[in-house]
Image 1 (spheres, rainbow, N blue to C red):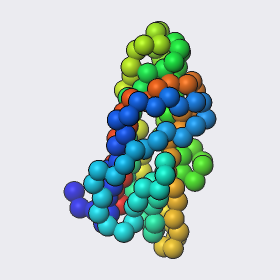
Image 2: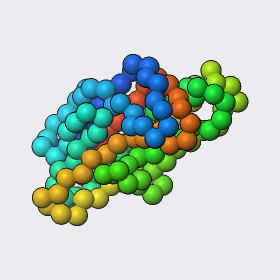
Image 3: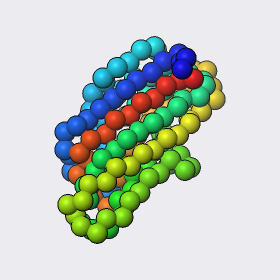
Length: 134
């Protein structure tokens, strides 16, 4: 695969996340190029083009029910970039995967990607995110 910029972030520290809150992305494991960077709990994309996103999230809900994680771009949910799972017991860990393709239209534009827990409180055990500018 050939790309202009890429980033790989990971957070393996168990963190309880409330509904509507942003999931902490941890630290940069690998990064190259000038178009993608980590800033707080968001990934900044700079420059027009397409950005391929692949996230893997392992979490444990605090109660039985459905847990949902959504990918947002500048605070707006990306259509189809949502994953959810229903668990019968609160101690059951689930793995969610969110693949997406995001487009920035203007050459001088930048946008921020965040992952938000949107359905039920959970402990995020691990999150790994790869974003590449293709």
